[in-house]
Length: 287
Image (cartoon, rainbow, N blue to C red; front, top):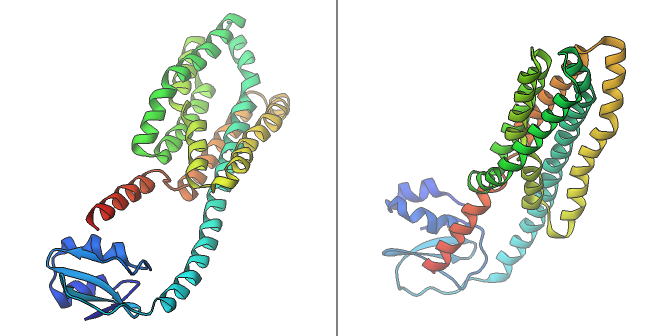
């Protein structure tokens, strides 16, 4: 029985009745042009023959196919896959830069207004300094552990949690009723957003080609720098014209926009790579 290289697994199992445990061996060979190898699966062997796979009893002999036809087809498919991969990682990293720009613009937009907010509470510069210390201290303590979580569970959950925490933090800053509540919110914001920049840089390292990695790190961090340029000016103009609430509302909207972009266009980049390494190791051990 012969089956197309690009896979007809369902018909394969229905017509042969082979056990499901054969699946890793079959899928491991789909599209592979290393024809000197065989995928062995118990009593059966999957061998390439003239652009198809054939099911043979283990240990039987088979004539080698003509390799140049398969190699030419694989080269065409490889070029197409490389073009698709380039478009894919460029789109992901552009979305990442947009997230950084929106989030940082909103953050820096409200940052100069904290002094005014503490003044409205009847507190002075001391409370402002304590709030900044709380944000930095919790971020320093949480960052190593969040990095471990990003390596264990993936980058995307860390990014989504951090962006969601920014939305909640900006909302809390707007409705905080006392200086100590405001300081508490600053500490919690530092705790839950500490992994945002490391996780985003890790995504760049995961998907960008090695010869373009530095360029894309610069582009993504450039989005954050754009936020630092535009945010303070926009926040000051909005405060002078509309008062305290409008800059925070705009910052909340920007944080929600960054979260939406991350939900729609930033995939998980770490876990599939780990699974691929494990599968490659298992295939090598099997062959």
